[in-house]
Image 1 (cartoon, one colour):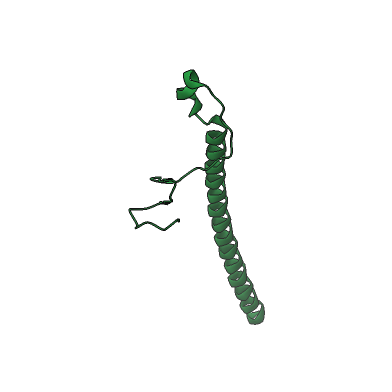
Image 2 (cartoon, rainbow, N blue to C red):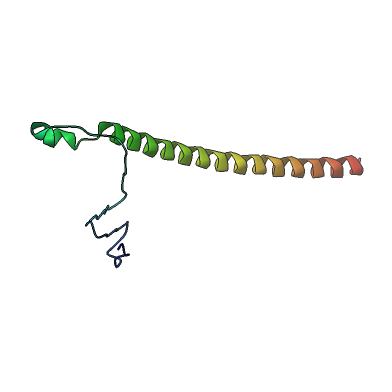
Length: 100
């Protein structure tokens, strides 16, 4: 039967009767990318180019979205500041108009 093992750090730790364990310092990539190789190709078979490219693209997308979020927040702050300035200008213009 499967059971949850004790916490051994950050990440994921899975134990089963079939001795499967997955650990990762800063993440785990699970892929259904099939690798077919013979014994002489064993070393190069562990290189999952498609999975690595997908992981890299995911990381780049995450960074792009973070940049977009920061730009949006800065843009929103700038728009609020401009709106506040416009409101202050309108108030000043009304006071001047009423004075004249």
